[in-house]
Amino acid sequence: MDRLQNAWRELNERYFHGRLRPISIVWSRRLTASVGMFVSHVGPRAPWISPRVQGGERRLIRLSIPLLQDQPHQEIVGTLAHEMIHQWQYDILKRHPNHGPEFHRMMAIMNRDGLGITIRHSLDKAVHALTKYTWRCTECGRDYHRQRNTIRPGRHRCGECLGKLRELPRASVDTDTTGLTGLVPTTMSQTLVSRVGVSTPFMQMTLPFVSH
Image (cartoon, rainbow, N blue to C red; front, side, top):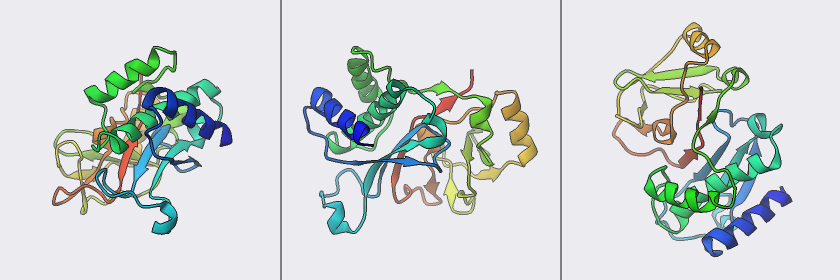
């Protein structure tokens, strides 16, 4: 992890002029729907309070052990750089992270030096096999894949169109993943909202996979 913290510091100085606030980088065995995730338990305009004072980490970058453990270091650094762009949107621009024009502009600048930052990655059968639960929006058809049963259709709505969600039978999920035709949705469609349209208590930005 010291190696990743060093990479974070170098990228912060080179591309963000040292303006990004220190953040914890943690490996996660539970993160299987994406290779990386920027997480904050407070909004981007909240005043900065030391995590020690708050009694716990409120902002962090998670990296997936199941998806990255066999990848070369350069791939991991590219994932870290992706999440740092989201941190830049949050810390500096004071906006909720997204994959809009600002993200693409910064990604292009960093990729000039060969970082290889991407928005979509190949999704193979091994990754599909980690999906145990899938919910589909009844309005726009977006799918939400999870390893754990964490989505409650009575409380959550689609982050794309606010449509209702229904859980798919396991057989339906197996059919899609065997043929590698299912899509893990983009960041915005991975974000769930409550029934009244309020964002969930913390912001999660994911680096999605898509099958080819």
